[in-house]
Length: 505
Image 1: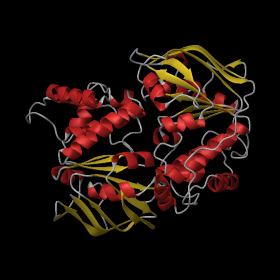
Image 2 (image 1 turned 120 degrees about the vertical axis):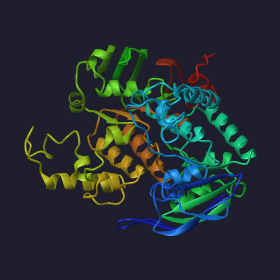
Image 3 (image 1 turned 90 degrees about the horizontal axis):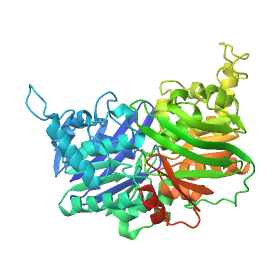
Image 4 (image 1 turned 90 degrees about the vertical axis):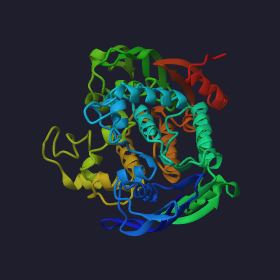
């Protein structure tokens, strides 16, 4: 169905794709795996017309094609869900999905008919998306589901999915895989870009492995395994499990009692949540995205107005509810946000500037407390330390944050927060869109921070991640904590049942 021949793409001095050859057979599910910066998303964005190749050609159904825009790709039956969303925030779900394929005549749009079709698609995939909701009021996970619906709405014959299961519970992943297999049986073709090797092995027929902009392997999925794929991706053996010593929890650092958060539209996003986090332990929060996790972390970080909340939040015995985000950081609370572009980075600022966000007003970054004069030498030294300790690539403090891959942007943010030596770390989706080598690295850093005495509150849509990292695991559903389980004993099915509204027996 699709063939890329000798595709080469440069961004300035960076060679993103180096004579890439990929063949995707019609009626198959084809996985493309590789570390961040390996070039897999770039290659598929060229196939989708989002980028134009410097060299090479694209073959669709045996015919050479010029695909210069996504409109060209859609006309050829190619759809794509991007890792970072292509949505217009003030518009509704329906308006975003039909954009460029508006139903009805030139005078009047038939949005009612489109909304009904979107609702049926949403129900079929169990994505729980309201067609009339406004994008800016949706969580990151819900926005990713809108992108999935957008591609499905256009009835693509070839569907390219970038990290499609990041927002789904285990049962929903199985349902999605069943639908993808049904699409394959009907002759449609699916390409999945993913970092989850278990997904590659579970769903794909063939897999292409990329490293440093090149294809380093093409395999029948049935003839490979996770260890071999990881080794090809990273160029070395990778530890596929999290090794951590038994936690030795100390005194309570964070105590939350009956916390309620009400959104601007009047809906309750958190409904009387209570829990504690102690020093030297990781408490995990598991749940299908959109069930209050975002609001919980942002409320604790000081990013939600006090007027929208009720209940108590005590940090080291002190009520922090009235304090703003800066005051909480001064007390030793660090925050790794779920959306690195929206909350974590200024993409057009360089790595030096991004590395001092949140401490830019105090020495040694500022010449004196509150000074507008910054010490460039101190900032560069701090940035170089983060780059070295957290393996940020390319190791150039003067590059804009936008030029880094998603995984390296994430490592920069994590490094910046760890340098604060926090007593409490609020971390949401620490490895979203991050490659397997960086995931291993980030997990080790989180465990080491715990062992140094930090209290860690971890939210992750990756169920395997949160169960492996957490010492205690809380399950959230519809804004409420519906259960606490021992992650070393509970099965993924039991946790998934609680995540989707089942009852604890």
